[in-house]
Length: 171
Image (cartoon, rainbow, N blue to C red; front, side, top):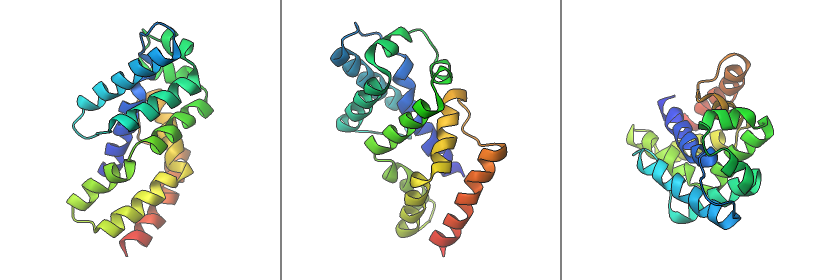
């Protein structure tokens, strides 16, 4: 579970720059500013690292999703407030975009392998979890609350996915 929290933190840090853009309204300026903020966010967290092409992909996608004007308007908002005002579909799109742009497989599997899980098993777990709608929905909910620990129905849905994956991948 600790490894899942590391991945969740990576998603939150990547997306956190969404509501924090102070560029002049021009889409390319908004993208450049957002890319810089994503890079800064990751440098503050030693757990997550993305290259320039990954942070550019994320910035372009987020600006395309929300529009430069909406991001600039949210300049003084906390990230959770910005995401709480977003629709569930928008939050899920941010999660999907972040997972598509970033190399989360290595971010996910690296710590598992360091803890003694075989590389093949770690990759199997990573592939299944990252593709899981239940996992992505928990991430989307967490973007609005800052809490990435599922409860209630979300926890049940995630455990329904997680347990078979663990048994399959670790056997």
